[in-house]
Length: 220
Ligand code: DC
Image (cartoon, rainbow, N blue to C red):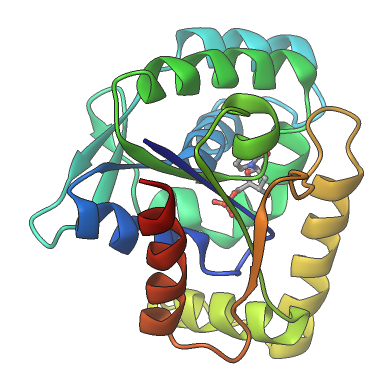
């Protein structure tokens, strides 16, 4: 069974998807991490986020893989180098939307994601899983939350890693990224017609997992 979890930044997609996958013993695929790893490598190699040609080339030869860490958190690798932390830096946050908007980049990423997903039961999160990557997913969830709450969550996440950022700046950054992700011509962030929308603003993580699991159980 494939569960597609899409939605804007900070809605709780990765936490919920990881816990849900753990609950059923399925694999969790974080497609955002793939775009983030590409962005990190591009920044390191001095490739401009607007340079579609070079980014497409980099996407084709880069190797991204996932391995479960000792704490159950997925670790992300570019080749044999671990990039789990680096791909969540403020710099990557700022550039990832532009990098991931190129049609050629998305084509290659989607091809890889489909390959990974064809292996079997999986919870995959992103922006276009239910609409483009796996439209035949048995369960499609669109997770969302109020802008201020999403910014608060991302700010705390960054704070834990030693990056200080004001609530106001985070709200602006998150809105800008959402606008960019929703407004791009290729695979924009949009709820699939048959997705169930879950607003996580006032719900605990356990409540959201419970709600989504109910939907999964009803379709199994
Ligand atoms: O989920 P995230 O914040 O890690 O995603 C990072 C960026 O990657 C997000 O701004 C848009 C892009 N993305 C995408 O375009 N398509 C996906 N399936 C996943 C992420």
